[in-house]
Amino acid sequence: MKAAIITGLNTTPELREINEPNLENDQQQIITVVASPLKNYDRLRTKSGFYGSFKTFPSITGSDGVGTLENGTHVYTQGISGMFAEKAVITKGQYVVLPESLNPALAAALPNAITGSLVPLRLRGYMKKDMTVLINGATGFTGQIAVQAAKYLKAKRIIATGRDQERLNHLKNLGATELILLNQSEEKISGQFKKIQSVAPIDIVLDYLWGHVAELFIRLIKDGPTHQTRFINLGNNAGTDIKLNADTIRSSAIEIIGAGTGSYTKEEYNRIHQEIFPEIFQLAAKGILTANLETAALENIAEVWNRKAEAGRRIVFTMN
Image (cartoon, rainbow, N blue to C red; front, side, top):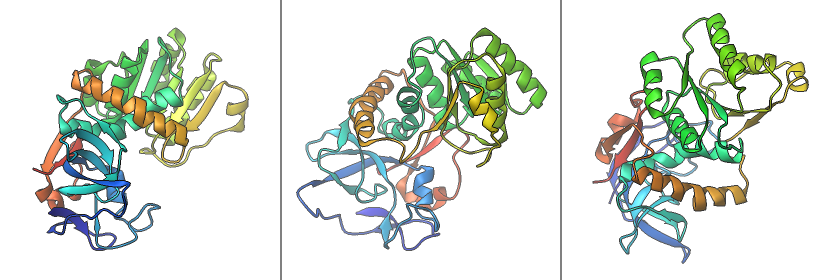
């Protein structure tokens, strides 16, 4: 079979012809892979210094995706062996059955983005109907899904921030009610934010940026009306550190929490896979949830690997 192989860290995967995988025990099964997304995590696993880097070589890359079981059932799953291959080993029964009408590439791309959007809204933000949600850094792939997730969860107001006006404007079509351009002066951002706060205080922040812009919004929330705000960090595209005065925590109702690998309990992970993923796959099959994808044949992995997708898109490898 064909598979994308790395022979060492800090190398680009190569498409090779290898033997089909073998099962090691009766708790494993084979899946025929149809589509698998290229995520930052997949790239990082091939780099030295990353906590999840590959330890043995050669190794097949790709961590999750969509495939077909022996009985013809289409499923989303995570691989024991790499998923950038025509076939992979998975844990028996550890998959989500997909609606027949759902595009495999879309099904493959959604789980990672949902884990960074709808999941924290529910499990960390405890989102309820008519809440006000700020999505900081909403023009990326996951941010676009977050806007749609907040709309689906019946947010009353969805404030989206970003640095690209054109992509920011597109978020209006997805459900954003207000937009804040981050390429303007801090004074203008602050003035716009204060007007928003005066109408309805922010209930939840999904923050993909961190850095100075996160500092600014935390300060503005603190200076506004006393209101419980859950500030959920999911990324650090604008910086890894912020300055946080202790007085901000003591004199406000802001809760600063994170949501990522290692932050969810086993019970929460079970809920994500057993309840939330099936729900979002149904939404996607009905066209309620959409995503901007770039598909690429696995044969082109060496060419695609080292370039980024167009802003706001997710690359998905297809095996056929």
